[in-house]
Length: 362
Image (cartoon, rainbow, N blue to C red):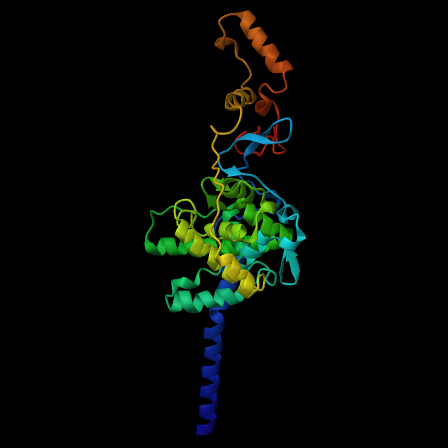
């Protein structure tokens, strides 16, 4: 009788152990389902994921194809994954059995070593965060975010309102994380790994008003992305973590230490061997720093005239002192395709073009 009672107690204890162990998983799954259903706020649609909105700089080209200036809110231009590969194939690196550009090897090795093996959420990293960061209060372990999750946060930023209590801020952070997980899974469904890596590099801030890898390569090295060597790529990936703290212009020592950490991680990931890492770590950071502003570059007066003409509204009679001046202005507006171009032409969604945000090529 006593044996039976002890057996029943043991079975009951085991049952409760399983309940306690799986309860957090069940709660997490329910929260994810409710988040995906939009109960905790709007989620980006598949249409938005297929056509993410970003502030793209408008570039002005001379007749020989050179960029002479730009208009921007954020100095950002997009490049495709294929455009990241150096022309010299000896500069290509091997990572996870694939040939990759140096900038992508640096990114994956630093931010998401299991990038190729997960589908947007890296479970081992989440377990590590749960144990070391949450339980042991060791914040040096990072947040466990994958490249896809970071891209989700860049494309659809969190609510950053800070005037809340600690509990409210924590709750908001948890909901934001859940939304990023769902969005990351959708991104992985819609895009290839190569496209996700390129989108990430195109969206992040590198400091010095450079957004996206193309602008960053021009700003810090006066190069195209495919012209970056391994140590330059490592520096740019390193600076993303904290653009001011690791700025090679403001804090060169921090930037050098951070670049060398990225190179070490590239070796750990198998993209470099020890000899390559050692030889690159002793090299200084050599900049060709050319920050971009609206007032720099060639033909500044012409560019300002271009901006005014393209953004011109249709002439109104009340703005003119006589009928003849008004008629001349109206004729110019109607006959000159450049005059008021941003007002006359519409995007696919029916809204007018914005010369500062829509990435026009003039």
